[in-house]
Length: 455
Image: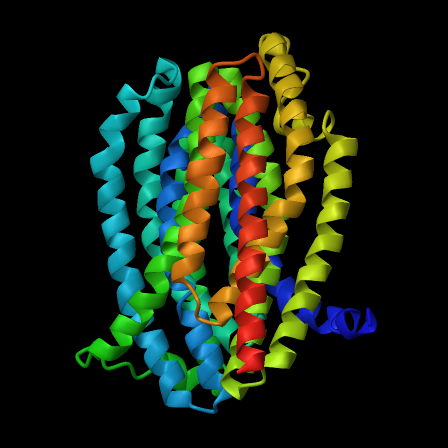
């Protein structure tokens, strides 16, 4: 009966909404940057897009890796083993810190690639100083992710949300002061946006630790770490779950990053339009990400209890809820595809009027395609969350690689650069890759849960 699934909606939303707001907070940092930088011109907006393309790839690896902490903590919580939960957090913090520093170093090494990617010269010149600062912000961001995934593993999803809201306020204030040189501050343009992002992420990690430490329930988890004692078994467990999860997120984010680079080959306006459509799509995707965490936590709890029939029912209720919400988002994109891009640009700017008009027309076409992949994107990320809750990560990694890089990317490349579809052709490949991923991941979930119930 339908009520078997719909009766879970209220609890799933209560669990997911703080995660959704927290994830939206990450996207809102980019949203605020894009709107403020968009007032400077399309070249500046394209430069932020190009710089962030490198950061997003690295961020996907860091965030994907940190998700290993959540199912371990959720399973420990379900089994009533507090010590195991603390071990997962401690070792997760060590690995996330090392990963953040490594990714920062790798981005600095890759920086010269910007000059060989057939991107507009003015965009590359603006992107380099922006990239250097935002790359360093990965270190606090990935450390924050360790605390966030731990908190969510205990079904306490509000604390990361509070930290993210504070970070957004800090980011917007610093952006306003430093991008435009308000109240006597220096006018730094997009470098000001990078400083805002960096400062807000350091504040975010400090604030979530402060919040968790204040609560008696979590104080013993987040204090008194003995980092001299590192257990190889726990490290290996986190890596065995985290590395495939990182690759799963990397394969998806990398194809969207490839779309940024392919758009750059088409010109700065195509790249600016791609950035607008990508930022809007990212915000609706965060709803799926939040529900994905709910699926991961609830499936992890039921796995700890060994209740596989209930596990399957709860997961399917989350899939159904995701489908309903994504149909609503698709309708919003269809109806608002010409108006939404105008939020990002100064439509009254006479000097850049031709560029701005072209960007709006291209972005509207991309949002038409994005309306349809809302459903595929939401379903695939939520099913992926359920599979992580089952601690099934290796086969889903193969599935995501096939879907995005053997099916989606060749279509994006051919239709984007070798047909008249151009930017729309790039996004057709994204639609195909996301749909293939959603179908194959659901088949995997269906097979695994039936096998567990029958055994």
